[in-house]
Amino acid sequence: MFNRTMYELGSHRSVIRELFEFGKKRAAEVGADKVYDFSLGNPNVPAPDGVKAAAEKLLSLTDNTLLHGYTSAQGDATVRKAVADNINARFGAGVSPDFIYMTCGAAASLTVTLNALREEGDEFILLAPYFPEYAVFVKAAGGVPVVVPFDPETFAPDLDALEKAIGPRTKGIIVNSPNNPSGTVYTRETLTRIAELLSQANARYDRHIVLIADEPYRELVYGDAEAPYLMNVYPDTVVCYSWSKSLSLPGERIGYIALSPRLCDKEGVYAAVCGAGRALGYVCAPAMFQYVAAACVDERPDIEAYRRNRDLIYSALTEMGYDCVRPDGAFYLFVRSLEADANAFSDRAKNYGLLIVPGDSFGAPGYVRISYCVSHDMIERSLPAFRALIDSYKK
Image (tube, rainbow, N blue to C red; front, side, top):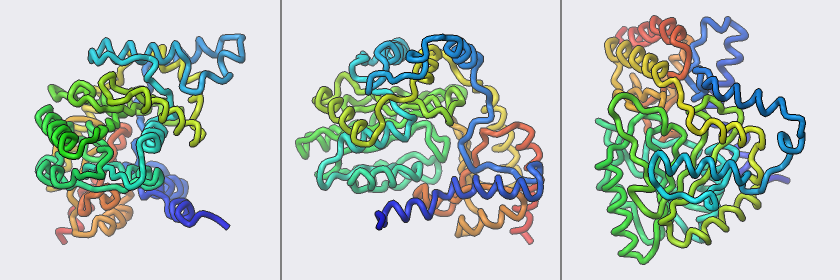
């Protein structure tokens, strides 16, 4: 009657979404002020003023076809040019608009890319800790996920383990920096070494392993931390981007795929991207927000608001005795669980109104993720609950 794999995915939703739904239900029962929801990466920081101005300008148009009609399947040509021009101005990557594909957010970018690349028996490497849907996307595309562990001192990839994981069936590797769930920004040295390992494997196995750069948090980097543009580090790179986090537009589902000009057989890969978008039904990303994104490619998020949140929650929790690595990017804090079973720890935290995500599905058992893209006030109000939680273990 139905596909069993899809049934399992639908009947057992992601733990992040389950916590989010629990939080809404709990808030209705006891009051929103008694629930501290750190589950979802749903930015509380308002979109830049330019987003509202661009949307209002578009809504004033009388040409309904232009505003709400279809664009080209791969995205409006002027929008793709604006995206390519922005990438080239910032990073000097030499990207062509003819190799940009507009998508319904980063999830669509990843699923389209994986389906475009995957051939029979292909493996895709995931660097733990990783966004849980990566494994879902890889399996749904018919690929095999191969998980590489991390250094618990830095949350950077274990490069020796990565070298051993790359084999003759490796088709791609997903690199997410700044990272969800840890907030780690991979150093240039780490990324250069990853590129070296891929290049060596290419020569050894006579293939071109693709580096899939998942970059929704690119603009969320603090202080002097550097997030190198991966097209400039490794030639066979495909960038999957979303404005969900940088412009606080997660519900608008708008992003893109960009192919490096140095990607092997980029014409063939782009045709496969277009074919995968067609097969999956991801043609013609939302037209209005294509135009909004094009008008706002130079807008930047209020990084100071996120930094203040990061500094508050990191300082407070470490002072209480929680163990976590200070993040240099994104808006997540990855904290060692106060007991071996992070799911039990997460359940116990609910008793104090705290919704924190266990790390098992991120490939990191024994940790929990705290998403601090919430109001500064909520973080302040939640601190007594975090104190009570850690005290409950001391007792």
